[in-house]
Length: 236
Image 1 (tube, rainbow, N blue to C red):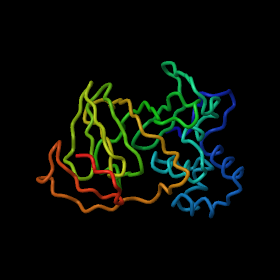
Image 2 (spheres, one colour):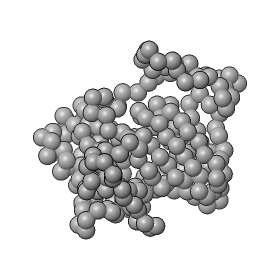
Image 3 (cartoon, rainbow, N blue to C red):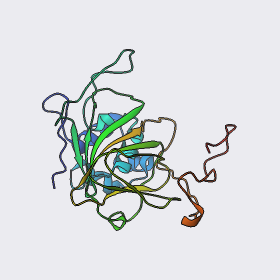
Image 4 (cartoon, one colour):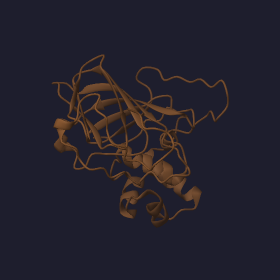
């Protein structure tokens, strides 16, 4: 399996590992310092930088936050910063690619920095919940629209949800979550995540919530608030 990135930016753009190393050095961080900022082991970061392992999306978010950059900057050099009237596109077959054992990602419209959300075209290679030793979780929200195949969406608090072409799902990313293909072919989805760039927060901090019995949950069930108290009422 190839772990290389095919950048949608200028020819010669470096791959994920060398790009992480360059951004770390530009920021003046040692491996240990970046480890403290991301919650990832120094040895793990070193292996990512040398392309010995392919990081999960959760780890990519941690790296982006720890480095203080937009997620897309780990895959391509953004050519448009925060200005009004921005527009970009990704043609069929293009986009920065990243592979993990569970998913193949294609980053869409990666040349705009500081977007409010991150669009991905994802091929679901995972076939079982057992493919995930631990359900990924991170700050933000996500939306999935199934383009082909059958997908089972696994999240904390809820029973698995089975989706087919044209079906969609929106969920809180702080819940442990994963997608697995249930069709003979690998399912393909449009996967949209809220931007991971929150410079004043540490995204490796996770929310611990007690597991609820499946019998207590339904599609529209109310989930107890597990985030820090705020003046705003929770969504029901």
